[in-house]
Image (cartoon, rainbow, N blue to C red; front, top):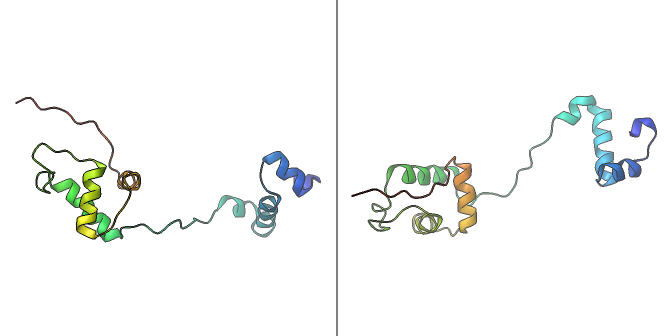
Length: 119
């Protein structure tokens, strides 16, 4: 649209973005052609509370131990509260349950409802 004669402000209004964003896209296109628009830098994001090694250790604990082995009770099941206590006890780090849920999702764990076993 800019190449067709529209101003940055007009293009920004049509696309619903700030005119400086449009200017940076145009600059990127002029310097690197279409390839400059297709490749985007990864935004680093916030540093995780647990290191990669700690996350791997937590993953192995979840996969290879039962809640009873971790002193959560015989009839206990895994939930974010238990994992929160585990992280606090093992790594001395306090993470909100919502953050634990997101971390578990990134570790490819999924939520399932507990099932009952007939005795």
